[in-house]
Image 1 (tube, one colour):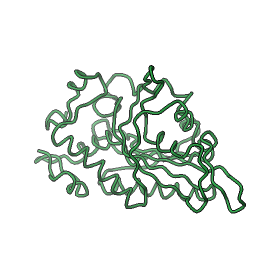
Image 2 (cartoon, one colour; image 1 turned 180 degrees about the horizontal axis):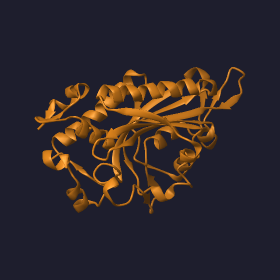
Image 3 (cartoon, one colour; image 1 turned 60 degrees about the horizontal axis):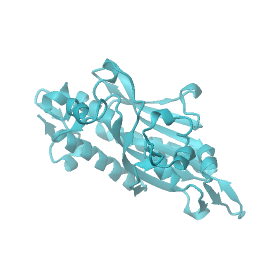
Image 4 (cartoon, one colour; image 1 turned 45 degrees about the vertical axis):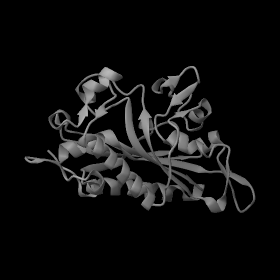
Length: 279
């Protein structure tokens, strides 16, 4: 409703040119989206993450390396002629940069960040809970990825959680964090924490980031190793986190920052948007 009122996002045009789940961002909506991407990338860069701009399609070996294949092929868009998959997250191409690589110990940790569009074929069903920006087939996300020695990976996980928390606090959004139980986690993950923001419209909490330590699961598939002081090769630990996924962040900003004059833009975004209110 806010999108329509302020002409920020047009879902009907997305249906016209593509189909449901492919919104068109317009005017200040497009600028706010771009501002969030720049803000997330700049904060990641400040935290020591090297920015990567990856391809949006990957081959089967890459999907297997990070655990999307063969388990989640039904959720991915397949380009049949070339046997290439549209990426569900930048985690896939960025982590696969280190497939079949032996990293010198003195080059660890590896810290990468990437912005990408993300494509999810199985993005939800119909009904009020998937209206608007809640679940999309195409959305934008900034991802952080780390390659660590096993003894350092859980300290890295805490740093990643602090990073995501700092983003949400800078945006002034109501948030909380959950540690997922085994039944809710991906089989690739050893431990996962979800950050959620509050949706005033739906009166419930919505996930905006998952931060996970995969320990050696992905590294074993990827053959991602490091050479230790003993001159032997050992499997790395891989970690990744959304920092952050944009659609629900956008929705939360619009819902939680309403005033009689318009929607207030968080101060941290104003140097990117060039405006401080949407009216």
